Image 1 (cartoon, rainbow, N blue to C red):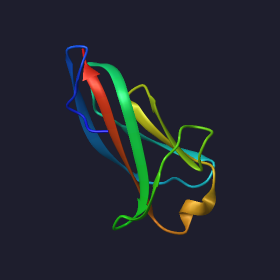
Image 2 (tube, one colour):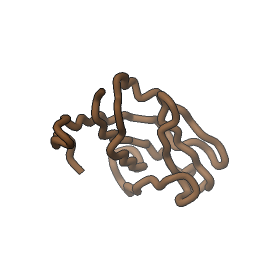
Image 3 (cartoon, helix red, strand yellow):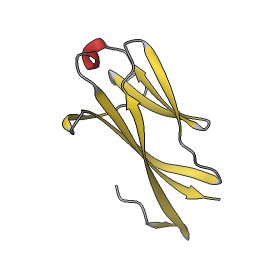
Length: 101
């Protein structure tokens, strides 16, 4: 989904954030999204891929994937429930779409 749409008369914005390396199994990492004055998140899309963009995989919501993401307060939380991602460095990139107040 591309940002920049007009929704109910308000512009949709987007921001791409590097959340670092996928955490080890049964752990999580928090990355501040750095956004303020957000009225509503319209979408969040995350991808984990090895360095150089090889083997990309979309992240799921908590409970639905080996690696999931959620927005909790001012942070993007990445959770891992499998060691499948620990054999290579998987980098997580998250794209947030939102409407400002």
